[in-house]
Image 1: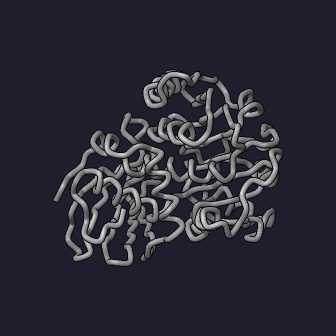
Image 2: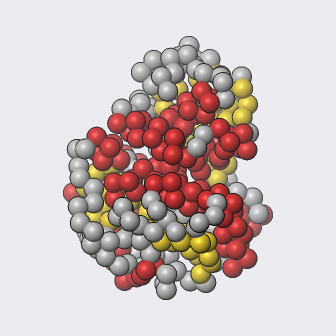
Length: 321
């Protein structure tokens, strides 16, 4: 069984290739037995274990075990860690992948895929709210599909925001201005795309800040009790999600206003598979405010895992990538 660490995984696949791989995966989704979430003792009582399996038509698959420890930020340890086991069509484990790196890559690639359909084609200014390990990859992915010339990073701690900005510069290269803002409220009204990748339980993005034509990309929260955007942001936006199943179970940004009767299920216009297959239309006018909510799905894990294993030279039986 091949064991692939984070650095090797990162070197194996260009972001644009992964985005196109996800486009095909959402066009022809694999079988998803069901995502399970278990609470883990300790910390502040909000530690989680996620079990996420997916299998293709030939029986090959990938199973991700991911831990979410919000209190790890106090130890300077990543909040999300895990491992991904890749299985052949005979059920044989053929690879063990660093789950955190796969998650960062596939999560950011899914948002960039959504951006192709939902953001303005001329989007040039990206605001990243959040300074966790995912933030630099969100910038890398959005820069891969839109002519981003300016990236602004906003976080609670200035020192960490500066570190994140440096990581983004290393990933996106020259030609993109990367800066730090002390607060998002002055930057959000002029940004073309706003990506929130935080572990905040309460909104960090306010609807009154949003200008017409913006794409709001929410990827940080995957708990029914957590919010990254306030009610006004939800009510002002056309709403799209990565998957209905995940969103209607875990996305507090939408579940909370739904419980209070502010929006209904019908306000969510489509999921990624609808967008890539053409069943629903994304952006229609340049002045629309559109919001994309992602909680992650094993569709992305399996597609990324197959691409990574194939690129490493250890192609799984039945792999068609």
